[in-house]
Length: 144
Image (cartoon, rainbow, N blue to C red; front, side):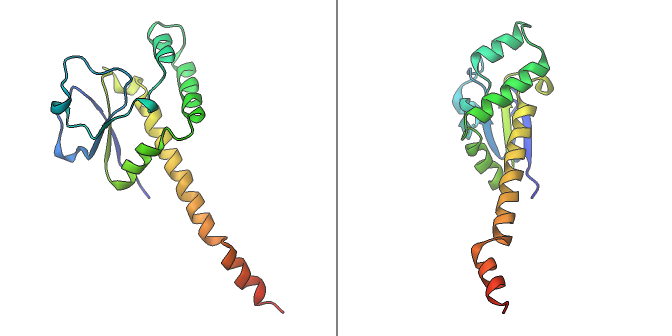
């Protein structure tokens, strides 16, 4: 099933086509009041840790190292993607960040992680239906 996850700067105007709008930054964006942003949620748990974000911004680590460590952080926090997956299953999900360059932010990595988790969940659901115990029981009971 195709899922529609968009990336957008928090400073861009909210649009009716945004669907669920979720801010996924640890820090609140400067100069923005909550009621103006029309947020569905502010979800900090899926954003990079402060230490990881700081290391990237200070040039202590490369973008590749940041991506690897961010994926590790997400995999260590088992359920950090679940709220985003639920919203993505309901329709369009717009992930928001204050980053100036969204392509170089954590948002593309987060979107990929959510899409991968959704695909894995869908694969497991499809496999479970085909190999459920009642299917095996019927198959083996029919043979002499």
